[in-house]
Image 1 (cartoon, rainbow, N blue to C red):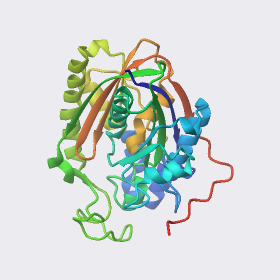
Image 2 (cartoon, rainbow, N blue to C red):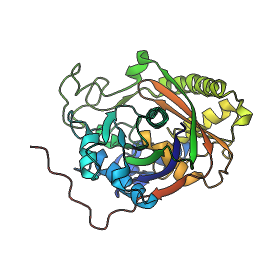
Image 3 (tube, helix red, strand yellow):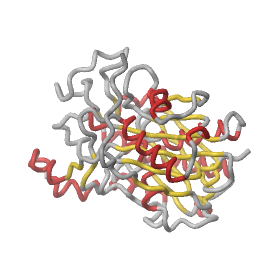
Image 4 (cartoon, one colour):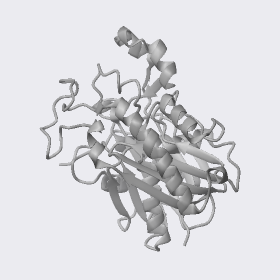
Length: 351
């Protein structure tokens, strides 16, 4: 049995943080030079009390309504996040209830970042193609802004918050999910890490309480990540091509995780691609972690034609990387969910 990606939607927080605002806070950052270099002019930032699950909830509603899908037809909910509502229970369980899905629906979180979307498509494909379920709602959601020290120039201009929703089904149509390839190098975990808050680390300290490697804020070794990406991304592309029995010339489009324009530009050069084959969509949203690839598909896939082959490539925290090949027909790009006119009150904390 095949599995098909039938539609995608996404949602961004209402609040926008511009380079001019960051430059006003930190003139020494020279945002007028840094912004064009990384290709990011603004990013959306969650409001106080707004969680990744809130963003995913709006993306999911927009997708289900846009595709005319009944809540009872959702057999399984996958939620990719590194910013869950609670240590436990699983945030996917909370979203099952909040979205009004059936209690016979499976639901689980998986903690993976920038490679999370291709991983999620592979997991959904396994459930559908294996005959376990017929329909999977794949959600991604992150509020990395909560993890960024306000004085850290290496991360704050890059990351934005956002969420996506995708519909994977056994019903033919959209884009058939083909070969999937993966890689992991946990030895590089310290290159992108929040050390506090887990069982091995110290208790999480107040946001911004200190700024140093090993603290409660996100630490990123940018140069090490560049070396990692330039090595591993071409490898996983080649691995995925071999799995499908294809060459680079057989793939019409590549959608790379949008780390920033500097990184994607270097990868395009390394892979011999141009913007037409590997589009960017990062300027107005920043690096939204696991939501970058579905956002690109929503906003930059208009030139894609039925019959084309599209390879999705994610890479980052873990360290982890993945590629997934799609046989493109005509999936529905529901697009960005509008900001609710009267934002719903967030769910009350669990008793």
